[in-house]
Length: 512
Image (cartoon, rainbow, N blue to C red; front, side):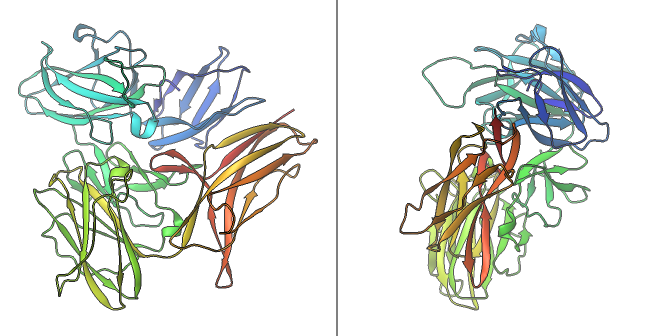
């Protein structure tokens, strides 16, 4: 969709980028405050937003008689303006009032977008680009602040993952310019700026600090409201913010308060109960905590180390896992657990594995033992974006189910396979029953039994579409179930929509 966002109380016409062999299409939008209506011209939509709608990141689908699209992001902002081309040069810059969010697109190779603002001496400009992390744009963007002669005053490449963010203090009253360009997310042999129909972005501009993230980084569904952190790294302790869960997408929430909303992953229910603790510096006094628990903080000073006293109430094997890099933060975490009395180091780790740069450690301890968990930055780097959350818990056998696509289609009277990947962890050896819920009566899918003696990495569900099945789109979910201590335990299958966001509802399209 372009523009990719809408302001509260506004109505805008947007373009759907893609193929539409059948028109008009149906639009499935989980937010009742936002209405997306197909127009007469193919590929064009009108998006209307209620004036009281909450700022949010919405995931919508489109469907016709034979197919359904993947989930597409649509953002609600307090005030949103659309990019106006041409704006490649300073003399063509598009000026905007602050605060505002600009919905833009680098539509072709070598494209550059420039926006202008008026700043008084001593005022700070805060700018953040949202593109790759949440919108899925295949771009590694660069953002610069220029003066009217084109001199680069400040530049940022990567701040949240590969999305840039920066702040700039004006030295005198003048016009200043924000320049945005990008390279491909996956480098190639081309030397030059990249662009395309899917190089969409949101550029948030303000002369007041914006929300950057919240602590804990991965709040639980029933956690107390986390602490908001603004662009200056300050904690908004008095900020009256709310935590919401986005309909239709498991593991995503938005954090709405006095400043523009941010989005953050939501810890799955199976991780609860889990007490959360937050500290702001190494000097903070921290009482001992017991797992399962969530420990959050930021490394703001050179060579800073946070030490967490852990009181283990039971014996067993424990795991501490850092959440930081996977959410786009800069922390190169190093974990160490030690016996505070003997000073013996029980375990250390930098990277959980070759492709996972957040650290993770495991160790064995006896009941009623106290240990000290320490976290630092391996490169001794520091700053507001060196934030972390550590999940500490006793290790228990468990499993996860995942799929590689979130929608499938088939004609009435046919059969199709729906592969489910099985990740057995920490010695999980129980027999699993994998099954589907939500399909209509005319569509069947027999449960599959998965044991350790069989192929344990994947199971294929066979979906049989009856000859009398009516054409349409049907949501369904996949579960894995096993018996433990006389009770049934189950987990839900997921599709990875973004690095930190999963979908647990899939769609079947039946055609005739």
